[in-house]
Image 1: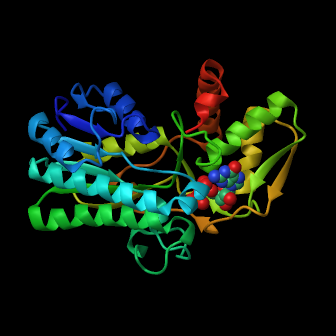
Image 2: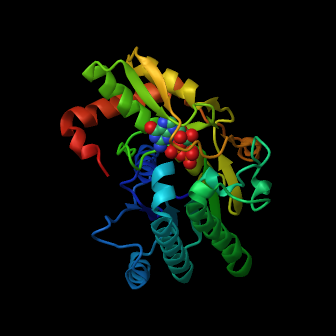
Length: 318
Ligand code: GDP
């Protein structure tokens, strides 16, 4: 891909978008275009059309989305389905109208059926029913990847969809009501250590299994797709290994230096029992994740401590 290409990173303040911007800068891409939500509201179709008409964008990285953990998804399904559908249709259709050739759409592993065989292959999509705690979000993301596939078929665009497993890294959401498990436990363990608490509350039974990918690995995979002229299809992006939530909590406590006990709160939902992606499709093309979990959590914890120390707990609320 041309280093002068005009690349629009939609959602550049989020965890994925900010990782993409860092990676593009590190690789020498000099024309990265970003807009804050105040400058361009991606739910406003007319504004999105105008933006694409004037900006001469070559590549879109569509990382703007309403995202959240199990509690936020289960309690605000209307906002999750509406905002994600409208952002995807606005951006993908406006990009096509403005003759943007290449686009990468980011989804999530929760698009796959609740009880599908593990590890999850891309072809299991739509094989059976979704996990009910996040089906509204998943339906919106499935619609987004189908938009890309349909536009490629009908209009010869080159729109690719990446489905990362659970992500973590800098600029994550640390608000305990809407965050995912890894940032939530990182914050809780940090505060428990500082406040000298004897225990740490972990939601659910601790037995569900999840896979965690550092967001810098997702940014690397995205550049791999763009630079290797992968122009169509759906690709899982993960590390190929999972662990139980209890083991994740233990690893986080070790990194943070919290030595109290883990207490499991059975009143909170477990969600889907296991979510491990089969990553062989992208591996066969030559890409693999390179950041190990403990190393990645340690780097994220350093970043968290800097943010936390400079801004305080209130700034961590969504
Ligand atoms: P999911 O992967 O879509 O289910 O989303 P989450 O990352 O929010 O949750 C993953 C698993 O971690 C679920 O079984 C949660 O119950 C469990 N979990 C344990 N402690 C926490 C916590 O403090 N916050 C969140 N969000 N999940 C937790």
